[in-house]
Amino acid sequence: SVQDGSVVWARDFKKDYQLKIAEWETAAHPLVDGNKLICVVGGQGSTCVAFDKMTGKELWRALSAEKPGYCPPVIHSLGGKRQLLIWHSDAVEALDPETGQVYWTVEIKPTFAMSIGQPVVENNRVYVMSFNRVSACIDVATDGQSAQLRWRGDTRRGIAGVHNTAFIQNGHIYACGNGGRYGCARLTDGEKLWSTFA
Image (tube, rainbow, N blue to C red):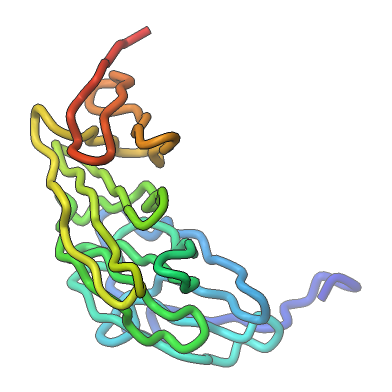
């Protein structure tokens, strides 16, 4: 309570959802969306859980992944719908933030489950990146109900940033990749346009 600092509610993910703590603990901060507190939790059927932010009551739970990863939940408008993007150890998935219903799933596995930086969006394209040359661009359908992999990164394509979230502007990806090298790549095909340590 803001009046006296007492705990209003609390949830123990290890006890309530059988969360198995990964190598680097947990790191995904929750997302406040209206009356909801949306959390990346873990466990079977509860990789993502929405709580009533005032009471802690569970509103919905969704998704199963081997590990929850470290990427915070984020909401973007795609295909005319508000879509909650969750990137865990197995895939990028889009959910209806009101119900937890899955709109689409695209399998992209970050190395060592190191999904850290948030998915970023321009128009109906979603970009993710992670350790050791993992990056990808996803095309979301115009109705927001499905998606497919547009391209996957490698040593020549995309930017494989680890601890940062990429930035997209005017069809260009800007991010810090392996070894602290900053770079720019084209969103449509991942072609690297420049990189520098300066």
